[in-house]
Image (cartoon, rainbow, N blue to C red; front, side):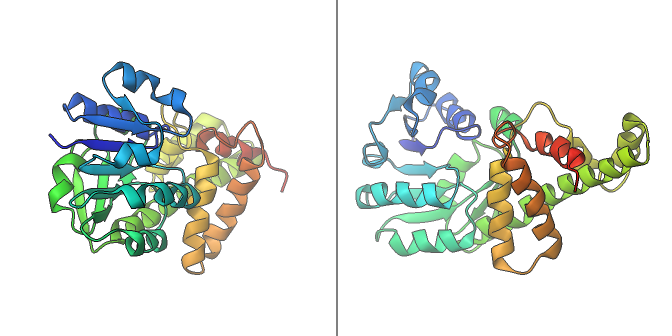
Length: 271
């Protein structure tokens, strides 16, 4: 079994790493807040003292981090330590430009794959995420399949690109549902009646996500993802959506809560 280093044990990373342990992979983990690794260590993982220590003997290195700055900081530590023949699987949502940056820094003999995921914490815990794999992923596809079905998206960077498209649609859809419900509030409609009517239409999936209670995707991450998308091309509707999530993320009680909390924030905004 491949020796795997998993860096980043947030809401998604921790249950993903547990899938690898359950499959019998020798697993080394690292997280900036070390206490988040305690449960995995109790189940058999080795806690690394830092990113460099985590990757030295790894056949596969997986990074699942909050955003571009975190990925760049970890790359500074691990690039000199990646061994020849290893795979580096970047699973964070960072966009294709950052993947290209990492490719330029990846040592000869190391294969970089971008493989962000579709799905939230519930699917991560169940091993039913959708994996969007770009680049030369043949040698690492069996490992990726531990997390859920793998879709090969094309050349390096295409997985990161498709993830931006998917997240933009989901985040925008949730904001649109929030505005529709704000309109329903202003018109004095019963909440459950309005919600049910929306759920039965084309926005049904977005309605389910807007009012979900068993998943987690923070408003701060929504801001990051929409900002990445609007830097690529002009997206006027998503620029308005970005404003909604930025306002929600400015509230300390909402910023790291699931985007369902942002829905309530959008509905309550005076302007």
